[in-house]
Amino acid sequence: MNKLLIFLLTLTWLFAGPAKAHTYWWVASYYGAYFHGRTTANGETYNMWADTCAHKSLRFGTRLRLTNPHTGKVAVCRINDRGPYIAGRTLDVSKGVAQKLGMLSAGVVTLKVEVLQ
Image 1 (tube, rainbow, N blue to C red):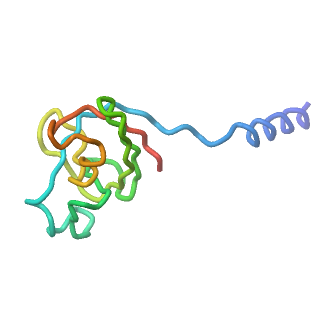
Image 2 (tube, rainbow, N blue to C red):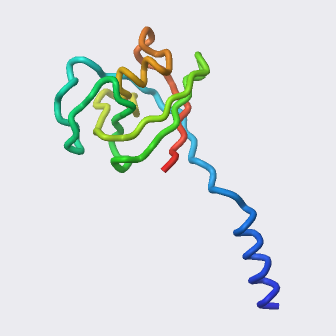
């Protein structure tokens, strides 16, 4: 019985595939020129054109796949800062990411967020 159980668990592990990303819907805004060149919470210099974002608690270096449901555009960014500090918002993206997502004119949008790592 134990050998059969181990065999079945091994097959399940081998063929299950990668774990699915956690998916959320977050209100996001972007930040740009005012912070460009300043130091981020993880010590990097903020580049408003880089594929980076800010979140209050996710670990620095965590990668997110963002989808704007209004435009269908997708971007991947990396957390390197803390924020946003405005009630009702969960994510601040760089101006470069906002441009890729087509959210510059709206300023604040709800994004589909998939935590990749």
